Length: 270
Image (tube, rainbow, N blue to C red; front, side, top):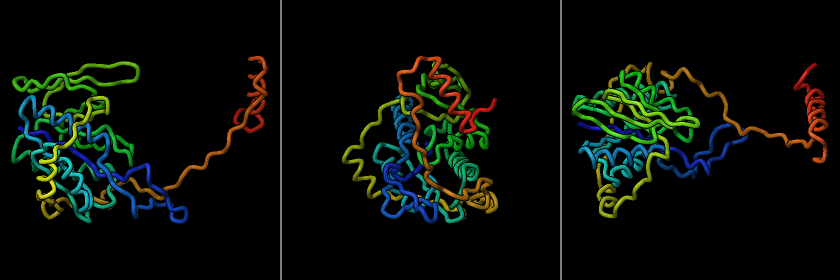
């Protein structure tokens, strides 16, 4: 029995800049990190491994240098990693990305039964939160999103019970396995790799699966398989705010001043 954990290498968003002439991200000299939400998916997988004895496989779709992210996963205690890398995968939106990841999970399932797929809630570069549910839909897995606690995994009944973090409340739900679970940061505190594991991970070979391995239709992957097209990336221009009144106005007077200002700027009409 195994758990597959999907992780992504993303640019350190605190240091990303946009080229004002081309409107594209400046990637030169920008360090890359593991997507923070995915670190919590990894940690939760490790905890399930410790408790139930699952075998863990981490997969990532990205350029060749994404193997560093997978090495970090190995240094934390992941059993196996696979890098999905091919120029044919480049330019993929969430639709095409979930297609490649789902196909890789199918191949892993043939080797050893996949009972669970763990994902971070979203990535910090795209912020769509669509890839995990996309994988679940393609594999016909039950999907449990916004999970902040995995309560129990009942292997005899083949089901999992989790707690979901919703706005202002929580809900506890059960679902049959296999299932895709996307987690929020509050689910756990991540561990640090040990020195021996880091040394082993540095020398480990990271298997690479390209499209010769997956054998997917080129029309369904990468830019060709992406219905979403990004035409331009830019930093939004923010107009300086305006103070209405002097702060000493009575509530009724302040409200009238605000309404007059909105009408003047054509935000309201009578």
